[in-house]
Length: 312
Length: 267
Image 1 (tube, rainbow over the protein chains, first blue to last red):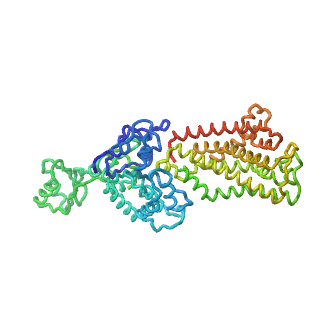
Image 2: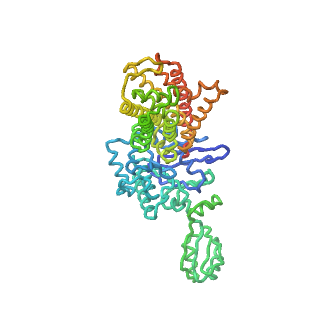
Image 3: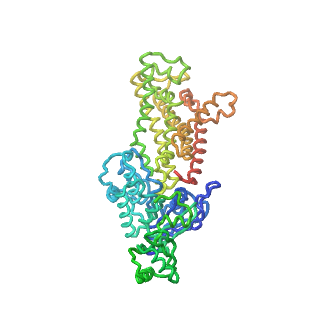
């Protein structure tokens, strides 16, 4: 994590006729990051990813990947980038091995002499080593997804751009992909993971940007985005007594009191351990005291007022 | 990229099925001619068919004349229409572009591959035509369409020019289909679009009121290679045919390149 910037966009904008799909997005992704790019379907994620890779041309703004201007220098940038964009794409009548060999042979930076061993290695990494010779059209969705990941890994990229990488995978497959990405990130590969799945970003990423209707609404460390909210939940059989204690304190206040098993308290500067000491000191039996954290869904709701298109 | 494209072409079943079917039709016609002995009267029906009944030497030209109006252009339009749109439909186009394969390079590789297919198809049909003709009707000295007799060397040269002429005519078709192929993500739409252009051209060719545009229609000079078998060779229409095709190839390939190099790949 040398801190070099791997992806930088400035005012990135894409208009299709009167529709602005991506609107002034400024991204900054540092080397070694596991970066989540989160937003509902149709929020401009994929268009942004396509602009990063030179598939779609920006209407205005700048894109820099691995320190070089895109799409002007894509010939230098893209050989060191692996990507999975909107699902894998393969020739359905050919085997997975043949597909990987074909895509490897199609461009620069994939020497022929070790092609076979590189193909076997990535198949092994994604758990497809025993797949045999059947054509890709006979693969399950999860297998295709794995093969797409294998293709992205084929030339040991410095940057991986993955769009919904766990799509179609079972829980076991998701865990495997997660382990794989963690390993890669540890070795210094930067991972840019675009997803509409909050759980995916929450589980995989250290940093995240949240995009909504083409605009960036937040960009920060995931644990900052999910920081404690300044509230605690106090579970106690002595609700009335606890309430009286809290009202007697300078600062904290009871936010929610209509439940019989506990209270929600806004701390307002008081440390949770101090609150606990005061409660217990006053004879309140505390069975549980928890600092409240938002999950990404709530962050998303707070930032955009809209969770209708996001799935947990 | 080019090696990959060529290997995809030759390892694809469709390529060989198409070429076999193209070669089979003239062979079937030859068998019917041999068995029934009923040929069109001289000057009527498909070119050369009347002549080949007694002499198989010109059967390659007859075979090409049989598949030229419909069969061959359909095959070429399907292959060229599939070139880019097929990749888009399979979802492989975006992975080729980010591999990265430069867009102009991808287009050139596709064009060369389609050209190889056209040459392969025309040459296979001509060779099959020669073999079938020789086997069924025998090889005899050829009298030209004009009535004088032609030497073996002379006939071979004229057949070579015929093959080249038909191939260039089909490259015109391929250019139109390739242009359609970068416009759409549907290989079917691209192939049918190119065929629609050819049908339109053939319809206009028949309308006397449209006589002024006739010499510029892509299909107008297709069968002009018949003139290669006159003595002396009547080059005028053949030359014009080459010229018109060159114009179409330049215009549509230029258009395909201009569009593809600035196109947003959303497939």
